[in-house]
Image 1 (cartoon, rainbow, N blue to C red):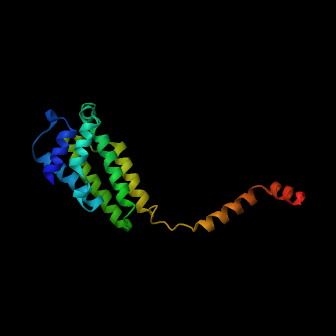
Image 2 (spheres, one colour; image 1 turned 135 degrees about the vertical axis):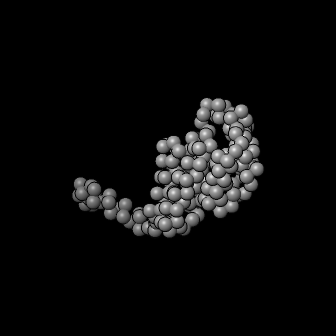
Image 3 (tube, helix red, strand yellow; image 1 turned 90 degrees about the vertical axis):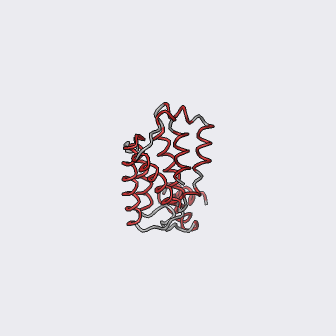
Length: 170
């Protein structure tokens, strides 16, 4: 798996900037770990295919423009959001994920991926907070009939003049 991720990072980040070493291994481990944690199976998140699509879509230009970390955040937020819809985690599990995201972000930042920027971490934090506080899927939804009845009641309350006109018309 690390070899596939490394291949993707080579595609995403220009080869000239690629560095071997402990920091990169830490970053690769972080990317694999967060992918595994949010998807349940890192192989299900097709990193190799994503790397090829990245390259075909002009990924080298994105790397040269130093937008790699932004795109990485967007991808992670997308994967996290999709996985979160299917998870029924307790708030403590979301808190643990957030701590891991911060730790992995620091590792990627040390590897030169600038993973600790405020914008990206903010987006990931929003996803985590949304789901940890009673995720959209986890919130109990009212039955559509109840919602419709409430909306009708709100309309009646909002416009008493309409009621009077309706009564006068009869």
